[in-house]
Image 1 (tube, rainbow, N blue to C red):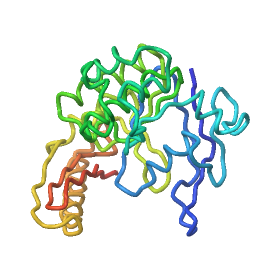
Image 2: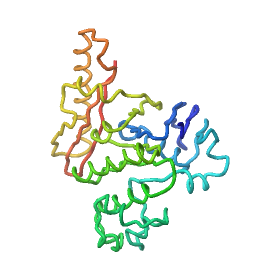
Image 3: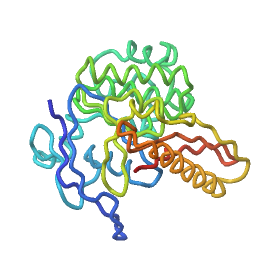
Image 4: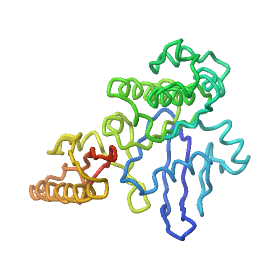
Length: 286
C-alpha cells in the first residue's frame, strides 16, 4: 500500500542552485528504503521535505493521495511522520524515558531496553548520556510513535557494530511487522543491504539500485577502509582515485558483455583522518 508519493519534486537553494530536479517516486507501507549518495547531493534536504520541515520549490508530496499541505504541515508532522534526526533533537532537561514518552502514552522502558538502554539509564538526564546512548533514545522515540512513516537521517552513524545490527533489525521490524514506511538516509553499506529498496540520489534524481544482486559483482571489499593521516581536504584525492578505480573495474567487467552484470557498482569508503571519520559511498555506472 502506497504511503508517500513524490510528483515532479523540485527544490532550489536561496542562491538558485537546484538540488532536486523533478523526482517522481513512491514509498510503500511495510518496506524499508535507503537513500544513498555522496555528501552534499541533497539527501538530507529530500528527507526534510518528506518530513514537512521544508517546502519544495515545485511539485508535490502526497500521503494517502492527499498533498501534505492540505491539512497543514504542523498537523502532518504531528500525526503522520516520526523522525530520527542526525543530531538527535532531544530535550536536554528531560530524562531518556521522558523524551520517548513525548510521542506515545506507552511505557518507554520496553523499547529503550530493546535499543540497549537499561532502566537505570531510562531515568538519567539526556545530558548525562553518551552520543551513542542519545542516538538510541532518538531511535526509541521514533519507533514508539503511531505515525505510519518513519524518517531517519544516519540512524546508525554513532553506534558500534553490535548495537548497529540490533538497530537495523528494529528498523526492519518497524517496516515488516508494524507495517510502517521506513526511509533512511545512510552511508552505511550494512544498513543499505538490509533495505528492501535502495535509491541513489544522483544529479538531483533518484535511481533505484539493485543492491543485493550487485554485491557479488563488486570485486573490491564493500567495507573498504582507507587509512589517511592527513586532512579531510587532502582525502578528496583518495576518494577521486577510488572512484576512477571503480569505474575501471566496471569497464573491465563490461568487456565480457554480461547482460546480468549490474549497471551500477558501489562501495562504502571510510577515511580516518586527524579531523575525524569521513564516510562516502562511491559509485560508477555504465
